[in-house]
Each structure stands twice: as C-alpha cells, then as structure tokens.
Length: 172
Image 1 (tube, rainbow, N blue to C red):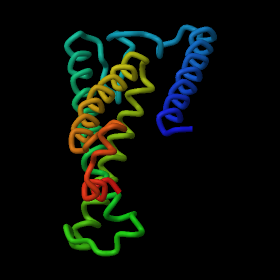
Image 2: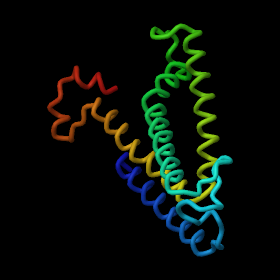
Image 3: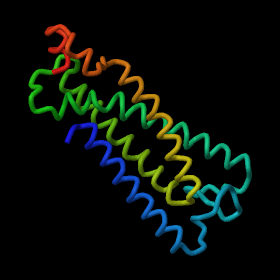
C-alpha cells in the first residue's frame, strides 16, 4: 500500500468513526446546558458569567486568539524544542546553550499546559465554545501547514526522474 493509500484509508476510517460517534451522541443526548448555544444567564465560564452579547463576543475572540497562538507555537516553535531535545541522533546542539534550552522547554511546556487547562474548561462548558475553539485551531493549522509545506519542494513522478542526484540528497 502506498503512503497516499494509507492516508486515504486512515481518513476514511476516521470519518466513519466520527459519523458513528456523532450519530450516537446526538441520538442519545438528553437536554442539558452543554448543548446550548450563545450567551445566557446560566453560562459561566471559569467563574465569569457570560450573559450578554458583548461578553460572548469577547469570549469568542479570546478563544480565537488563544487557539491561533497555540497552533502557531506548536507547529512552528515546538518542533525546534522537540528535535533539539528528544532526537537521540542529535548529540551536538549549536543554536542554544544547555540552560537556554532547559529554560525554553520548561517555560513552553508549563505555559502550554496552563493554556490547555483553561481551554479544556472552556470546551466542556458549552458545545458551541468547543466547536468555535476547534474551528479556530483548524483555520490556523491550515495556514501553518501551508507555511511549512511552502518550505519544501514537491515533484510528481515524471519530474522526479529528471532531478539531479544532488537535489535528491536534500530530501533524505
């Protein structure tokens, strides 16, 4: 099976499972405060009552800012830490001192953990907030993936045969 085929079948399987779970949840769900949408007198997010359109809008904007920042940091910054610290084949680090890398790693992990805690609380408060959070993350991810892919060279099979041997070393 080719890598493309593997990805295709994984995506199909993921979609199928998602449809099954969504069908079960929607079909079996009972009315609750979680399935409400928008602001209400009963909506309290991390001890803040979201009872007006203004507060709800501010909350949605904050969710977007938090999630866009998370995606950019995780997709562009965290790999630098991960590959510098956890790559067992990388024994010499040129870009950081040991203490700098320790500081950056622990600082990023604690801040990311705290942000994750707050976003979990927000996401379990009400479904529309969780959905808004997901959509904000996915739109930001679309951008960061495109940025990362733009740094790479892609060739179809016909072009690959014409590539110079020196160019192939860059891909390995």
